[in-house]
Image 1 (cartoon, rainbow, N blue to C red):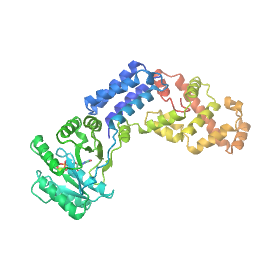
Image 2: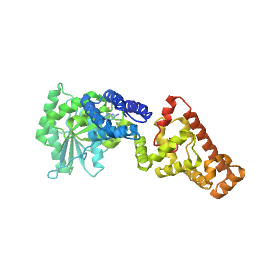
Image 3: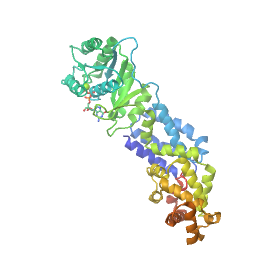
Image 4: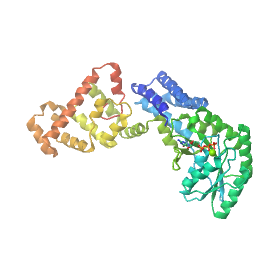
Length: 448
Ligand SMILES: Nc1nc2c(ncn2[C@@H]2O[C@H](COP(=O)(O)OP(=O)(O)OP(=O)(O)O)[C@@H](O)[C@H]2O)c(=O)[nH]1
Ligand SMILES: [Mg+2]
């Protein structure tokens, strides 16, 4: 989900990555692109405006300008602000403590997924120990009652369809629940009235009579900009207690979640991710933000790097690398840092999505190899580490013995090291565009 937004923001950050430090102009430029990306992803313009203002206020000024890795800081700020919009306290379904059954009224425009969601929700809550009954209160669309019955029967969920009006059906379901010991009635309503006002009236009168614990709006995430207007209107008329966003599995405009949450202030209680009965998930703001930004892994990496890297040392190594004074001792130092952060393979993987040049990926070492490499370097003398050229075959044999490895292992490491030095040489003498790519990998040990 959220592909286009993800791509756009990633491109923006790709550009930022080349920068050593960010000026106010850089931040402005990046934010303009983020603004366009968000608008194109159908985030409501008011929400975008608010978000951009908040990011700008935090980005321009000290946080970013003083930072060693400005692009990473901007990513973090955008993420924090998105999370703040989506964060919510109450995503649990409310149950009455004083009466049984509790009632959930589902509302929404035609085709938004109410009937499907009613069954999914019943299925979900049953797995948490509840005993739900579905009420088929859509009398407007021919076949609506049958649709609910058929879908519910696939999960062996009971449906009550007795009555001549939506209210009568709901009341009868409530009575039946009392008799049969159901602690919950989920009311599937109609989305097809000729005018929206009529639909609202019907909902409002159902709400007044039934006094439900939850009035949940079912919104199709693919309706984009409209989603927010729909949600706003329903909320003003019937006072929603929450939202369920459906069809997030499709080619959705990611903005719906952000906008609906921000404009209505209602918690998003669940998200629908498919047509099947199981395809209903709890809403996780942090996951949603990560998928909007499309940088879950990268963010984890940045956090790890920030927590473990010694920035001064990194800067020094970067200088050495580019001036080709990088030696095996520095390599050893880098490996130590890498070990603190986790496996190298994992990290190269994480960075893979962030446009890492292929040459770097080829250098990736497995966990085992990392250990071997360390042992080999540890067995060298200081002189050898500083000047690998003196490593003749008898020295190599000695090192292999000392580190419990083979001469082939030692050779492989030296070859790898040589390869890296060559690559650095290539990069240090290359044009600006490529240089940006290398510098952009700040925070990545032994590749900076
Ligand atoms: N891919 C996908 N399809 C969904 C999801 N939720 C619902 N649908 C599909 O959307 C279509 C409409 O769903 P319904 O549950 O009938 O919608 P409704 O709101 O009850 O529609 P009306 O009763 O006509 O107002 C069906 O084909 C569902 O299978 C979802 O999360 N993902
Ligand atoms: Mg329906």
